[in-house]
Image (cartoon, rainbow, N blue to C red; front, side, top):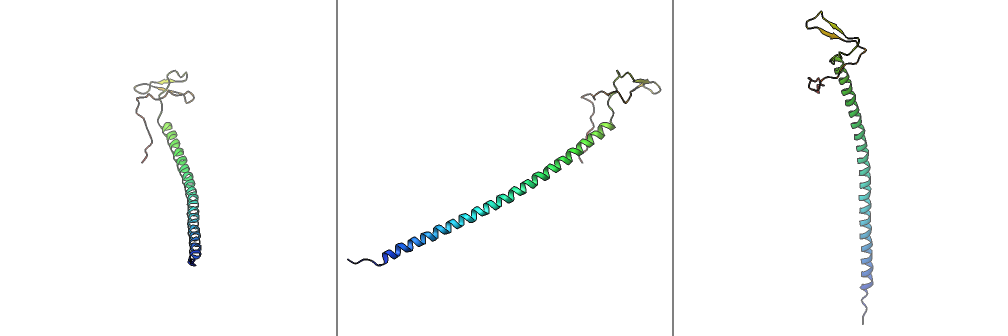
Length: 121
């Protein structure tokens, strides 16, 4: 009975190949994990910058709408409250109109009245 001298060498070679293969797979996994972490960090920074910019844009638009609404409400007069104790009828014009004081609050516009709004163009 002869022992095959190549048998121990073959199993060692297989073990060596297995270790090299496992090491290569682990290195690939580490590279993939590193790429994933760096990519998610970059995406997180980008999304934070976009949220900040969107917030700034929204605040500017909100301020612009509020200023335009204040100007529009100051330009277009509301109806005079005839219960104003300081109101006076001006009969020098036809038809006579009621002139109110600036210190008495005015009435809200009727719901079906023509409304002035902000031109978005």
